[in-house]
Amino acid sequence: MNFYIFDFINQFAGRWLWLDTAGIFFASFFQYAVVSGLALLLALNFKKHFNPVALSLFSAVFARIFIELIYFIFPTKRPFEVLEVNQLVFHTPSDSFPSGHATFFFALATIIFLHNKKAGTVYFLFAFLISLARVFSGIHWPLDILGGAAVGISVALAINYLKAKA
Picture 1 (cartoon, rainbow, N blue to C red):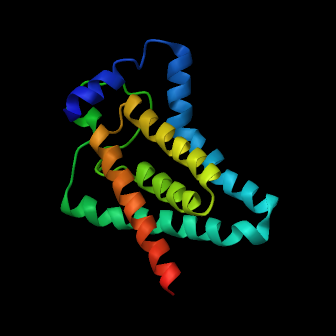
Picture 2: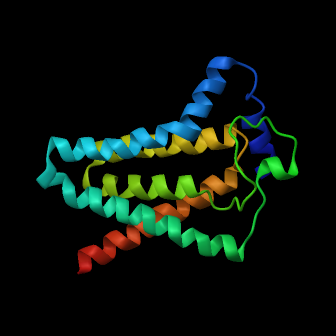
């Protein structure tokens, strides 16, 4: 199933310049705009948004570090290492499951959502676009994305819970 979903998404890479450009942008560059958007939240109302922004960044970084343990326990090859794929973004061969980008951005979105539903919904959309683009670009399996989303959301919820208890 993982292979078939990957193949369905990745088959569209390399067909249209506009779609490839969008895929490369969302897979490689959009992440900087998403993180910069947190600075915009702070600029709008520093006092109101400081704690959620700090907690979201802490959760995202902690979740990203946490998955290094998963890489050690469950090494997985990337699609371009085992298949002939339409690879639009260069990536060195390294552990694939779970996706570090999905983990980071879904953790970020979760904390933002818990504090501001509208902004959080937008951040979940951003996390989804980044993650989908990484499958489209040939550097992640769909299960890498689902695993990363699950870890990111779980870690963010746990950290938010612990913060509320403190």
